Each structure stands twice: as C-alpha cells, then as structure tokens.
Length: 394
Image 1 (cartoon, rainbow, N blue to C red):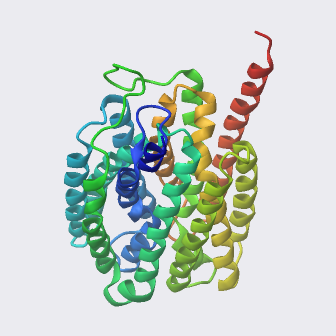
Image 2 (cartoon, helix red, strand yellow):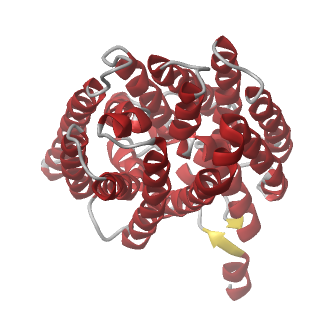
C-alpha cells in the first residue's frame, strides 16, 4: 500500500494514477504550448513599432492564433483518444519551434499565416495537458499547478525579452527566443504519459457535453473574452496613458510575477473556497483596473494596476474547471474547458479590433467590461440553479 502511494502522486478520478514524471511531462507540454500567450502583447506591439503590423492588426493576429488553438483543442478533445501521446507531443514541439522561427522572417500577412499555423499546433499540445487535468480527482489543484508553472515560464521569458533580447534584437529576437524555448521543452513530451484512460470505459471518443455543460462552456468563453479584449492592447493602452513601450514591457513581466502568486494562491486554496466567490473577487478587480486604464497615469500606477488584474485573473483561472464540473459531472465539458478559454481569448481581441483605431484603443476597455459582466451573469445562473436542484426533494 505504501509503495503504491509513493509511486503515484496524481490520483485520477478517471483511469489509473500517474507517476510524478508523467504528470510533470503532461504539464510541461501545456506550458510550452501557452508560452507565447504571456508575451504576445509586447511581441505584436514591437511589430507595430517596426511598421510590420498596424494597431488593429494586433487583435486580428491574436484572434487567429488563439482561435486556431481553441479549435484544435476542442476537436482533439471531442474526437481523439489520448493514445501515443509521447510521439504526438514530440512531433508537435519540433513543428512549433520551426513556425516560431519562421515568424521572425515575416511581416504583414505572413505574420497572420504563421501565427495561425502555430495556434493549431499549440492547441493540440494543450489538449494533452487539459485531458490529464480533467481526469484528476482535484482538477482545480492540478490546474493551479499548471498555471503556476506556465506563468513562471512566461515571467522568465518576459524578463529576458524586456531586459536583454528585444532592446537589442527587436521583434525578431523575441520570436527566435520563443523557438529556442520550444526546443528546450522537448524532454517534457518524451517523459509524459503514453496514454490516458477514456472518460467512459470502452468509448471511442469523448462525446459532447450535456446542456448545462454547454452553458458552462459558453459562460467561460464570454467571460474570458473580456480579459482577452483588453490584454491584447496593453502596449497601445500604455501609449494612450502617456507611457512608452518600456513601461508596457515592465507592466507585462510584473503582471506575470503577480500571476505566479495568484496561481499559487489558487492551488493552496483549492477545496477551501467556492469558485463563485473567486469569480466575484476577480470581476470586481478587473473592472476597477480597466477603469483606471482609461485615465492618464504615472508609470508606477499603470504597472501596479496591471499586476493586480493579472493576479486576479490567474487566481480565477483554475476555478473554471470545477465550475464546469459542477455544471456537468460527467466531465465531458471539463475536457473542453481549455478550448472554451482559448476561443474566448480569440473572440475578445477580434471584437476589440472592431472598436479600436490607430489613435484610440479605449473601446477595448468598455468592451472588456461588458463581456466580463455578461459571462459572470451566465455562470451565476448556473451556480444558483445548481443549488436549487441540489436542494429540491427527490
């Protein structure tokens, strides 16, 4: 009994337990897949400064990459059985590095094409991680561990970009750095699990979630799109506040540091706080910060405000999975939660690109607030109708 307990550190609600290296490998593949999202505002902002993109292009490029990522994750979750994961992860990792390197050689429409292909590869890599987390007995804890690792990696990269790489080599240096990081993460794919259990014994594919599961995914998509609408325009928002690109880069890496703290706090509090309480805290923080972003402000306040919304957002992120499981105990919707978050992250910048111009991007702030409140309304309905269903006599 004790030997088995030592051997397995990740207790699965569906399927056998995983060893420590297998769990770390599965999480590492996902960290690699999402690394670019932590620094994409400054990468695309640099392309604008180098006249290789326009301000409205920022939202469209983010939309294309994140949407293709979300679609790939969703299709894999619905249609693919988690088999031969080591081989799949390794091939995808090498392909991602090649695309990241190729992006450094492009501008204009070439950036759109490269990031669209990158998103599809990243989405398939993320599916491996989400499939593992959705099968665990405490998904919010393992989602928290994933977000801590992901955000810490993004923080280290953002620091390197801000202090050393981009001041010397610009956007090209940033994309080449992403490619090098992808190659360095190849061992994670090779030590991860070879396969995961089906959600139901003998099933060929995961299958669609029930009605309430779909509503949970829609609520997730709408809510996350609010943050995506604002986050994609961090550097132009800083410029309109009277601040330069250096402040935006500083705000990004400080926010990532705060996100590490938020993810760690979520991991520590898993099982001790209700997910809906976290939604209320995070939404209030975001609305206050986005109101501040509409004002001219000193650099320290901009950096502090962005750090606050980053901490709140990553404190919330792991609780999206238990919210979905509460709505759909079969966990079919939970497997699709990552895809819903990605599609929301794509929808927000797309919508924002329709309400911003080269000289005024404040429309993204009001759009983000409206989307966040709408998403909160959806998940509130799920939460309170769930409580009534539980209390109703059988």
